[in-house]
Image (cartoon, rainbow, N blue to C red; front, side, top):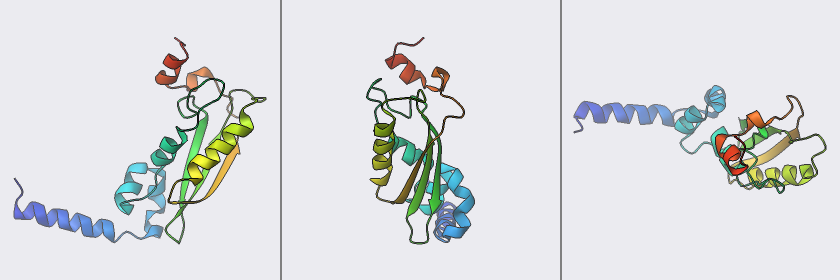
Length: 145
């Protein structure tokens, strides 16, 4: 049951969320929940990681997020209301033959998101990838116990 005080409290919270300016939200970008809550339709790290799950390693047939190839996702506010996204990812080995394809597919997956303006994909080899970085789902798909 909603009381008048509950309704007023909800209205105040909505007004406060609507009053958030992009520059006030800079610290919230690193926490997906606060970005989405403050911006309403804001882009979060979780949104980007979900889009990257569409990128499948052509040799292992598992998405690159569950493989643990995505190290960092940094979502940055722009003045025009869009976002720039920086991704640091790795490969299963330094000479991974699928590397260029995975980088290109990752760039396409993120740049295809409506709110994204610019995408930077950086391949890093430190720390080196290990099977311990995979999710349990990926390990199950690859029969690694």
